[in-house]
Image (cartoon, rainbow, N blue to C red; front, top):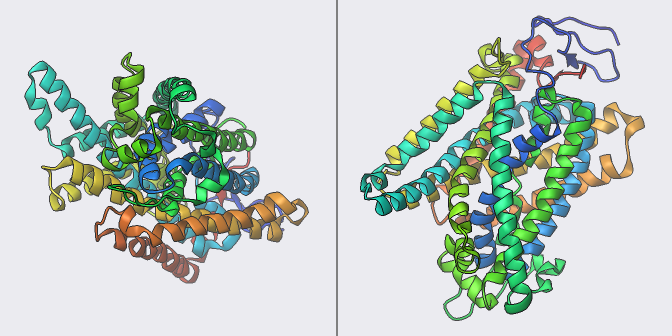
Length: 527
């Protein structure tokens, strides 16, 4: 293939696929820090995004109380299988394309620049609102903890700090930390993640020992795959359980694991590390989630007791058994770790949003300043500051229009809940598109590497699975959105953002063809 030079000083690779631009040897294209993180660092940056403690303490009570009941662990097992199959094709793609653009670049390669840019815009919005969402959860739990500390020490004023100030504190602190070398972020996230998993495993072990002898709710039937598709009937004061609810919240718990390829340019030997990190993340979280969603059932004498607690006092679904049967401060540790876990998750999403901004800025689709890196730390510092401003603006808007005097409603249900749903809609839709993109990419550009399982059947199964979960989301949007009418507008808003990216790509194709050719095509080969 004849090589061509474009105005940003990037030359296309001489390989089967046209218009792929390798930035690895260029001095005129800003570079992230090469070899900054190893396997452990990539795992800390991605698994923390899934926020294991938040996934368990937030999502499991809803799945038990309103979804699968006893079959909640089976729902997590089913999600593990589907997302592992998704990872098969995703890993195959990561071995061919190393880029900070993630979904954006992959879809651009497989489905064209128009759908790629639309997905890029949508992904930027998803990870941007995820940080704001987690700031709401952080503020809610921190305010509860400050109120308890104030009551115990006589410093009652601590309980009167309004949630927007606490959410803003989180966003600003994340901005300061992520301005520096990514290695600092990886180390901090590692500390938070290890703490979460350690105390949850202590909880699991203690509950399983108890459940093996005294609880009728704790049975092996919870691991029966058929239970993932079964709910339960209403009885007495208990509402009925809808299996679709449990399945959706199970899949929701993994959002964040898919971020590993975004750190390809900054990891050592990414074509080896990224695939390993992906599989460890999805399978490791699957085993952990299944175990940790099964364990609390042992804290209740009967299944009815467990479902009743989940429906009526979800906040104590884990903390109640921890306090009653374990003690030793485990319940207090979990109440603190839910705060640090929310912070860590927000920081992981902040980093991913920055790398999408960086990719789009480097390609000059968004302002070029976003595609620059710090001369010393090699961090995408302008993109990081931009993401901070966006998250802060979202918090301010919720504080103005939702209010500041009811953190349960405003910080937790409104900010955390609605922004999480808005982002999850995008992630599920884009993951489905990525599956199709992988299938077409290999057929079109790497025919000799097409494999019946990894690049054909696995992406097809993954697409069907992601599309089914997305359908479940919209079919149950009123419940999942907590009855808030604005939840019905989240899908259309996401669709408009996706459409804006597509329209911009068509505009660039007609008016700036040189820039159009680089959309999603800047990769880093010399790693």
